[in-house]
Image (cartoon, rainbow, N blue to C red):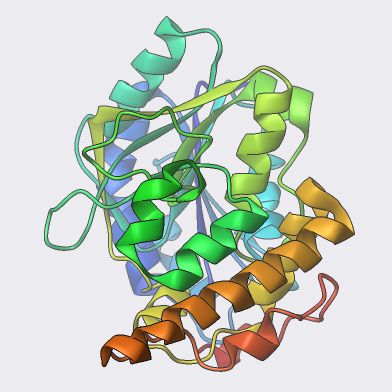
Length: 318
């Protein structure tokens, strides 16, 4: 198979209509660039594979490949299948719940070619209302867990370097960028390797960007590229967090893996204790007759989930 200038990988699990909408939004530009579109079905329990295959057959002359995984290995494993499907100069990992605006891929490619040490580039992510969404982040530290758990502006303003999201009015360079849509240079994969499949889902993006940074590769957001992200439609975790429902075990297992990988066992313990301390501070709001801010159900117990916890069947999504 000839080397492609660009492979775009869309990973699907039980959301074929969303995945095909994303594919339709990006295919015209892929064809213009001369790249390939790779649709990976992650062992969906529905008729996703049949729908993706039928759509490909309806476009017999389009550069589209469908890969059906026999198992659901998670976000990293599914995207790795797409990466390994062929040789390309650049790869784009694209969530199924996205719509790519015209010119976005070209803008990302131009930035990558102009900046040789730019290893990963993401677009400006827009929410379903068209407003910029947070897509640039600082490195999560154990103390970040305290700041986040307090839910108080007092701590957010005084310990800004430990606040993970970088908001639109901040010019800080990101330590990592969202993998809802990300372009990765082939040389980064050669240096760093594929995505870490020990992360079933979540935290694999921050872990990968930090690992790339250790090799001297930078990440950046390219605002000329725009992608709309219908957040929580592909996994449901963000929706569960927003409504304070219990998050799945695989989220906490990935969290534990992240802190172990980057801060060791002492760092993971510190992260959990800092989170509990932050919640205690949050509950001190009762002294001022203000209700504590809500968090995900059972989180105080779930943060002790180990990194090797077997992920539940993704059919049982929150």
